Amino acid sequence: MADNDNTLERLISRGQCSCQNVQDYVKQLRELAVAEADPRSSKKRGRFFKALGDENRQRMISLLLLREMCVCELMTALDMTQPTTSHHLKILEDAGLIQSRRDGKWMYYRIDDKERILALIKMGT
Image 1 (cartoon, helix red, strand yellow):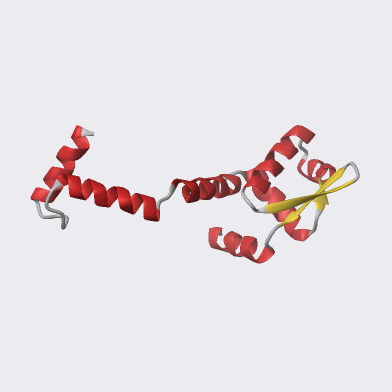
Image 2 (cartoon, one colour):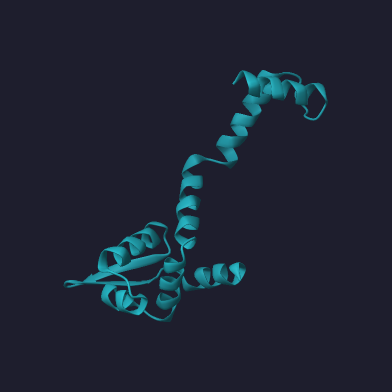
């Protein structure tokens, strides 16, 4: 923490910020972090980008954009085991990208918001 204070002190002494002392500046920075970079929002964004950061999950999304599919269809299409497929689907669901529904013993998955997903895909290409 002392190293941070020394660095901030140098920043203040060079006139590169509007504060007059380190304690006020530390307080402002921490308030800014709470207001603009709150941990809950950051965690949610992290889950979202993690979900999109895997090639297999992107392939699942591409298939689910076509239609709702059950786990066994995704397993077959992507040549994956059931545990691996379910693991990826859980990450996508936790990130709010897909929704599931049960029909007897079968679990079906679909895209939660196609327009949003298509916009994201378009931004990434």
